[in-house]
Image 1: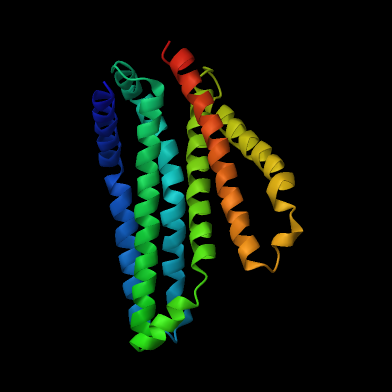
Image 2: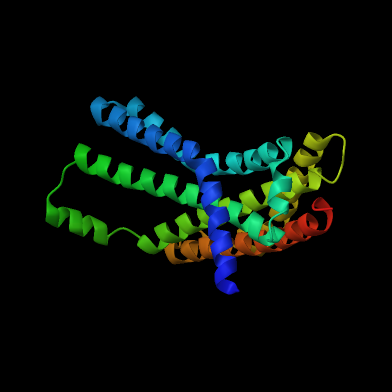
Length: 243
């Protein structure tokens, strides 16, 4: 039974990944193009690095836009109701969409970091010993905690995007307005909660290890909030949308 559910989930995940292949290739090609432009421009031409930084934003934000596009497209073409006819629950359907958008985020951001690292080595070649020493001085704990906090925040954004889209389908009029209100309201409430819990801790400032802890706590917070909102979204999806 569990094997069949996993197989069904993987099939749904594959379907979502096929839907996202254009956005994924767009991100990868944009990063490649920006990397080449920066390399050709050289280290002395500072303006050439701007497109590369813009592609970092593309890799990070496009999955959130995609999450909204997924539901708009499926509801407008009524394909969402075909999904509902399958012997799977809302958790599996929404989970496959979340997994696909997170995969899109990971592909884009990791490819960007690899491209940026290779570009740096090409523009500023160093000897092997110097590179090893430089790698040893990098605060990897802080770097990794920052990256995972962006992943957690990305998951949170995708989940609340799903939530706002589902909420808007409970009404027949002003659906776009309801989507915006639900999204903005959820963001406002979340940051009202995170401010006294995490962000007001002054002892993080100036302490690298404490700063790493800050991003770890932030990651756990956003994952926790995303889980709660995700459960609510699935319940609404199963009990109201499918009706």
